[in-house]
Amino acid sequence: MASLWQFFGLPDPEAGQNANRNEVQQPAVRPLATQQQITPKPIEEPQAPALIPEPVGVQPTRKEIPLGWQGPVTSDGEPFHDLGALHKATPVIPNRALRYVAPDVMNRIPTRGIAKRINQGDTVIVDLRPLVHMDTHQNVCRRELKQMSDEVGVGVFALDAEDKLLLMPGNDVVVDVQSHELGLGALLNP
Image (cartoon, rainbow, N blue to C red):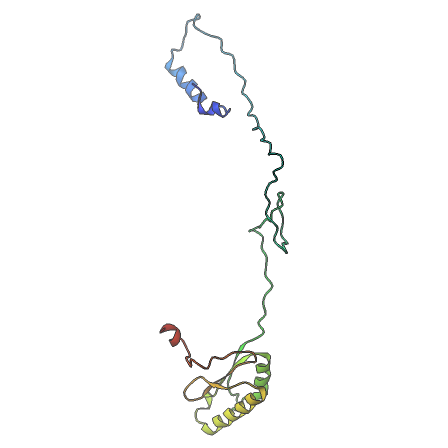
């Protein structure tokens, strides 16, 4: 009976083990009349599978290369995505920022610098809380900020009930004035 290995044309890896088992089970000395001369059988080389010819007139389907494809292409003409290749994206430099401004040592607010940053698109938060005992000076700073915001063309928004945290959005920044909800409370309590 042929083995599975012979079906595929490969040598049987267990053939040597079966031969050793047979030698142990058989008597060591055989009579001369029953001995047969064993000739070694040549091992057949596995043959390459026959190539199946493609039908005439049928062309293999190919994927189209995407527009702007810069990567390698396989021999079949398909785009090859090398997942091991490292491509560093160019770092994006932000052109807008959120600026925090507090009064300096002499309790002044730099309105010219704030106006310049607002024109560049930065959003500015002005904190007047360090001027706790100076109500009159707080009012002067508020008037200066209001005058500066009118010149620049943006509004001034109070972020707290005491009008000590003031927000001035930059150019092309949209502020929602309909909901009047600030902080995480609106997100946590839907």
